[in-house]
Image (cartoon, rainbow, N blue to C red; front, side, top):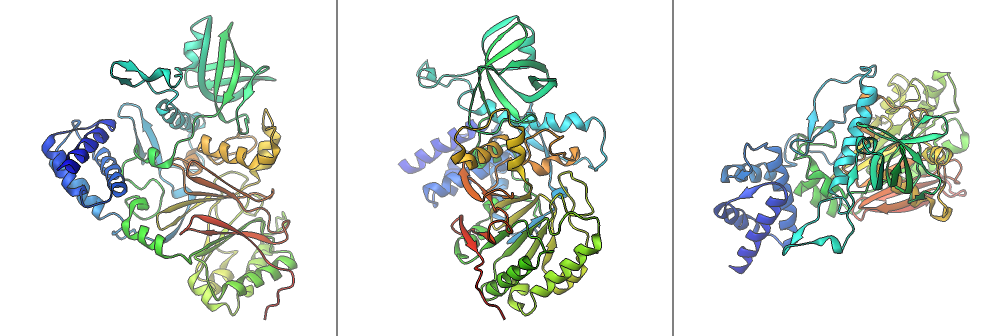
Length: 526
């Protein structure tokens, strides 16, 4: 009985945190449903039940038994519908778009049609949506959330609280001793930087600023802390919006499929897929970047790779471009892709069990240098598709779903862009990969940089969002390879296959670990 009472109290508290009220008889009903599970499992199911209730759009905050039963019945079917897949490649142009509703404090699906040549208003709208996403998670952070009153005493003594200001608040006064503003770092006048939000822009004095970890490029969103006087914010500290773990972020999306794919529900909590993920300990995903098919030595090494994996096929082999030197002769790429098909001759198990995924770079033909980038045309890969039926021509970036894990793959030399455009280069270059990872994780975006440095299609900017954070971000950057984990998200850079003596990365989903691999120079193949 004591356990039931404790569980009922936990249910009541959890529901209150999500804005719901639950009567004693309904909390008792839910406690009886959760009692057979272990403590960790109870917390997981309690989280997904409240997420489902948020998705039901209840007319009142009071949760009735009918709504609880509906949530439980729907969750028991998650992952068992026709859309369930063990592995899927998700096109960037099909990634669902969500908008934050400030009234109900949750994200809602935006079903309006999208196109490449979109309306002019989207030039500012996509940045406003990105700002709204970063603002709502910042306001929830401990540093900015209102102090909790415990026993009549505010808990401010433990942690200093900040009040987030908007640009219009500063512009409406002559001075402010302490101010923290979230906004877009932009250069509205030559040599003068501003922080801009939907209410206005404030000039920054960065002469005495202390920079936090990360790359601060024009076009990213920053938290500027300092004192405001005479129209200028003298910055003492410049940082990023705080990172947020994926489980906390998902609570504001409901149970809809935010990741993309065929399933109507998010497969993250599918019990069957969780079990498959846990038991398939031999499953691997192989990632290579800078796969220059026009170089004979690369073809030789790929042949060795295919023969080596024929006896133990991975779930997928992801090849990232550029596949040839920059050229407008599209027929040359077709010849090289036909040659790639010939390299897998005799590897029947590999072709039968492994998905070959081709992710083009911005240098590959038939698409402009804008993200997201369309896949290679099927007419150029017709021979490869015939010889290796499980070949998939992916967008750049693309999303992968393996069981419950979410993986983003992007081919882009982003490190060089960060280093060329940052206002402040990190002093500890020995850990530059941590600054790189922190920039992506805190910005929740693949290219938090000025559109001149990396243009994006305004209507398809959500395809570049990293919110909620995925389990793995795979960057095909030609700089030195690295792996860095932050806030439950691993950022992995494959490095260049050509420049790194034919090294590549192997990801093991069951253990969420990465292995460094290399094709030896003296390996013989038949």
